Amino acid sequence: MATVGLVGTLDTKREEYAWLRDELTRRGVDVVLIDVGTFSDGGGIADVTSAEVAAAAGADVDRLREENDRGAAMTTMGEGAAVVVDRLFREGRLHGLLGVGGSSGSSVASRAMQVLPVGVPKLLVSTMAAGDVGPYVGAKDVTVMPSVVDVAGINRISRAIMGNAVAAVAAMAQAYRERAAAPEEEDEPHLIGATMFGLTTPAVDEARQRLTELGYEVLVFHATGAGGRAMEALAADGFLDGVLDLTTTELVDDMLGGVLSAGPDRLEAAGAAGLPQVVSVGALDMCNFGPEATVPERYAGRRFVVHNPTVTLMRTTPEEMAELGRRIGRKLREATGPVAVYLPLRGVSGIDVEGGPFHDPEADAACFAALREELEGSDVVVHEVDSAINDPGFGRAAAEELHALIGRVRD
Image (cartoon, rainbow, N blue to C red):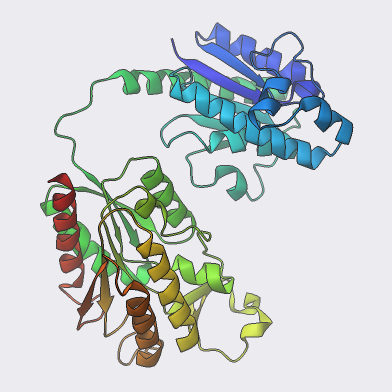
């Protein structure tokens, strides 16, 4: 029988969570009810009490009550819930997770959801679903359902919405349990994560085609922040067998305040996991902003390209490119698996070529020089290719290098 975890604040949402528990049981799934309410006594229905959740985060629930700092308490309970959920999952006692609530309840429940691997059902019914759900989804496959009305009692509307959520997570959990119990396919192809941008598409398409010919299954991630985070999460969770990171542009946005940052940890998960990697400098020539009027005033006078009405690109300077090279080099030096770097000497994107609006050989050279210097004495192999990144042959060469690195690890 599948088991669904419920993460909720029973000090404020006891009625709703009792109803959810009963409805899930009626649909034939077991339930583990995790109480994250700081001032709750469990109401006689919690399987994991708030005191146990706080303790999992290294805190004391009585102290949290005495301090009466709601924000700090919710952060602690979120951390504790994540520890509890991770333990239950590793013990094979959890096949899906459901949370309902407002901003605080959604924050705590989603924190717990982030520790579950991709593929494990995660459903959040939230009053915040009409806004920016990025903090709740993160890099995982969290399904967010608008609650329509506030989570305040069981009424005609909430009964319908939460009833749909119960039916959905019960079915997803059962499907996940069956899938997890099924024997693995012996001939399942190895999975490769690849990063792509519109202005590196030809290179990645060529690499993907070659890797497919070599027997791999290639997952392409759009390097828009969410894409990079998703690939990093899959690498960390053990889903990938190698990474073709040709498009590292999200590092620019993290450094310069663009809108497509994947965070400061980008380009680290594959290395920490020991995965073979082939890395390039695709689209490091640009930082991404929204409409032209939204570009920060501090960048007035820089070189821009209006990519479309909602995307404005800013060319990186030689100094910025050098710093990016150093950052990439430092990250790759820490990798525990084999790494190769491919440098396209004639342009790092589709508009950083001779005659293109971002063509700047001096800036590119600064990046290449800093990267080489940072990697000097390391085991990372640097290949300098006398072509632009999208020229025929570049993507194919990178793909074949990754194939060789994977073969070396297998041997």
